[in-house]
Amino acid sequence: MINFSEVSETNAMIEKENLDVRTITMGISLLDCIDADLERLKNNIYQKIYKSARDLVRTGEEISHDYGIPIVNKRISVTPIALIGGSACHSTDDFVELALTLDRAAKDVGVNFLGGYSALVSKGMTRADRLLIESIPDALQKTDLVCSSVNVGSTKTGIDMDAVRLLGRVIRQTAEKTADRDSLGCAKLVVFCNAPDDNPFMAGAFHGVTEADRILNIGVSGPGVVKKALEAVHGESFEVLCETVKKTAFKVTRVGQLVAREASARLGVPFGIIDLSLAPTPAIGDSVADILCEMGLEYAGAPGTTAALALLNDQVKKGGVMASSYVGGLSGAFIPVSEDQGMINAVKAGALSLEKLEAMTCVCSVGLDMIAIPGSTSASTISGIIADEMAIGMVNQKTTAVRVIPVIGKDVGEQVEFGGLLGYAPIMKVSPWSCEEFIARKGRIPAPIHSFKN
Image (cartoon, rainbow, N blue to C red):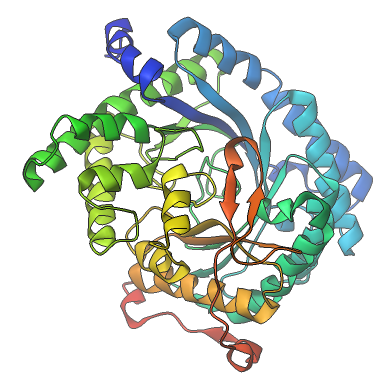
């Protein structure tokens, strides 16, 4: 049983070490909203979201007040809109109308973000998929709270390189359309391989078609708690290091389990999963990179970084699965640059490059996340970065993702401010060598041989 004594035990973590429940995300199926008439579809979507989530924010605030646990974000994820809009949407403008409807619903219920302006195209694109992807730049320019994602690959199907090529252009167009806000639109767009159906974290959240009509997914976070625990065992053996991370992850997850149980009971919505991901913020002391430094690295990016991150990821999962029977989503350690002060410091010191970050994604929770690159970066180069990261996910049977931001008008050495949880970032160097002929090839990269397990 989880009781108030367990919450009391975490008071120091909350007050001094930045422990929080990063998000309560309500997943809402829109499959029963489908209609061939665009106006009826928009009305169905708005009504379903509003009726389902109108009490979400208030309930989250009440739980936070009752238990003294910060719940930073209340969010919504919906069924991928390419599936929902297929019958009614005959142009990119029609899909943008749906994005505006989602944005209005999100604002009216008071959530921080709404995810699910998405398409699943790991083996090919339908007409609706292509239209939605092509509409992303306008949709993200005209909305405030809508987040978009596209799954372009999986271990079972390979990588749809036509979609990868298209998304290189879409990311550039999104950067250009939001250039007046330092290309902020790209911070709300994620490209996935092996995307999970139950991820509560933005910008990649969507409500998978395998999920129930409504569900609650919880994202917990506690990089500061883990770092503080490791300070107490500084210089000890790897065995002690692993046990400390594991025990700390258990305690952090139990806090998330408490919030999940309470939110489910008060809202009358089934509990889905807890995502164990260590999600950093720009706040001092809330950094995954600082955990790696506490393990003995001078900076994140130093030799040994990938090994240290692999250890951290594994022990977080081992501790978390003992605290909750329903662990899912991404679950591990996020390594975003702009949202992690330690990562920013490592980039500024010259210890961390895009290539080293790519190596780290082989063992971390997601992939190349919140990385600002020069605004002059070509669409084909962006597609090449995506293709590399998708290949890591496909071959290693794990989720990987890319969220890069080509900041129009800025170059290497400059800095961009996003604000809030998105933080700020130095513009990172991108390889100048061309991959244009490779990206121009049509078709898909086939699934690896170890995918055939049926």
